[in-house]
Amino acid sequence: MPAIEKGVAKIINQLQNIKSLETWTHEQLVLLGRNAAAWRLFATSAKQDVFLFQNKPQGLQVSVYQHANGDYELGRIWAV
Image (cartoon, rainbow, N blue to C red; front, side, top):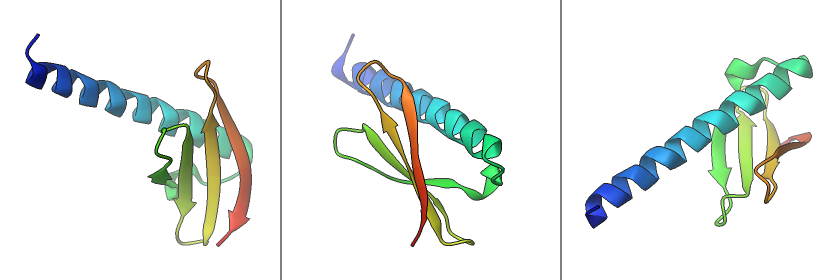
């Protein structure tokens, strides 16, 4: 597979992983009684194992941690 095709495949895989992360995070926020539609992925760590979601209208943020086995863990919600 040429290098450019490998690069495109890698980007597509990353986008699918982000979509899965967003879906999981929104489900967790709904379970906590939050409006999931108001939250957006805001930042990621360099290793892409910590993700920061922000609810700009309410001034809130939450971290989501991805463990080595692929499982996610929702951190605390805090005001910014």
